[in-house]
Length: 579
Image 1: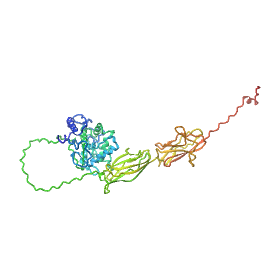
Image 2: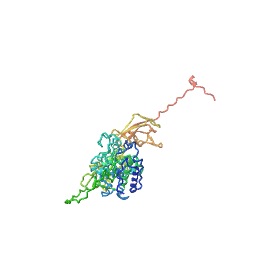
Image 3: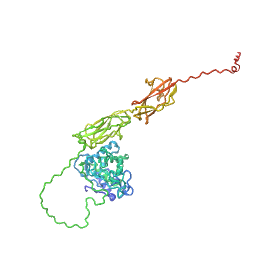
Image 4: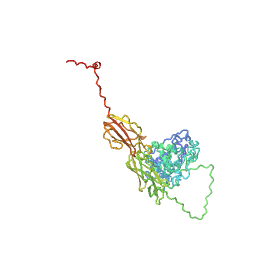
């Protein structure tokens, strides 16, 4: 069978039976166990309204733009189970992926697996989509930072043969202020990029024309809605969300399976470009030529060519091998703050930053640095993980996402190391202290009074602030003391009650609410009359005192004897009855 199978499958014109047979043959030869998705008719496209020219449903990354339809060869790069991370080697041209593009796919997979392991994103899926969307960034036509040297633009989405999508970016990315166009190596339309765009190479920009940014965004997009790409149904759904076409699905799956069988890196700019796109109008089968319209003239008898002096042929210039930027790094070091401190529940102001340099001390861009939180802590990076991979920018620096402390206080470290290298890691010491308040204020000025044996009718409410800002979650201590001038713990007088009804004169473990306020529980007067003091303190220096007065109950009046009626009427005592 020919090395290439149906070098193009024209969208909307290829027989569904032929497509199914071709994919089945490809699957039988190089993808055991892969299921062939069903078709919905001769076109092989999913029904999305009035054909492919209708506006795609929300979530189509590419706006259902055109794509390369060429299928991989039947002869696979390697046998099943062969390594898929080989260095720059020779092999089938279709299996070669430009080095920078290859690195971007691998790093996107590693980064997303660290933040969303349940998605099970394989880098070969990104490679399959990248092949079909842009021919691996136009054969690796990218600069040292991974940005395409010239724009890669899809067709104008003006409703003529494609979706009708009015301009959403003011021409910022696609240069078109009337309609949108898919842009970059992963062919995002501007409106989708606005939602999913990433800065994966750390240069401070979210650029759809940068392969690192675009590959990271594509991976996150494919993993959306809790998909598990190890499941065929979720995998198919993810690919179809990129372009709503069954033919597109089959083409991407074919390259996906092909790359899973093995691949190799080739120098940037030397990748093999596919030959046909889904919007081609010429339907000449691959490997054939159109029949001539008139009989061909008889060919003259060949004559021997005249000998010409031989000239030395200069050797063709060889392209230097492209190496992984990480292999050039000889040292990484901390850049900026070396210690990190914040209070519980707050963000760290400083962000762990490292600098990667080569043997000459020059910064190295495009290096993946893995940051890890180490130790007994509930602190996390702002995205909610303990580990993340960041790529160094053109200045050789990798800056970790902001760190946010949990409620657990204490020390931990943030470790940074070059992924795939055994260079010494660098560490940042981090400390989380308890929440604090520099000011405590009582919110009312009522005099608190009670009688012995009773309780105080009014509750005490205080507000904690720190630097003038409401201090939430601050642990307060409330203690009854002998006086404000002599704050020794009191042994009698007012008290709180614990859960068992026992008297407690020092209350701990209470925290202010989100607005910085806290209302103390009921206060009981005790059995001793006098003036007492309640002292409230907070970490950070905030204090407030509250005076409490306990009075003895007023004595009950002695009853006056009431005279009998006879005494009141005569003024003489009544005779005593004789016995």
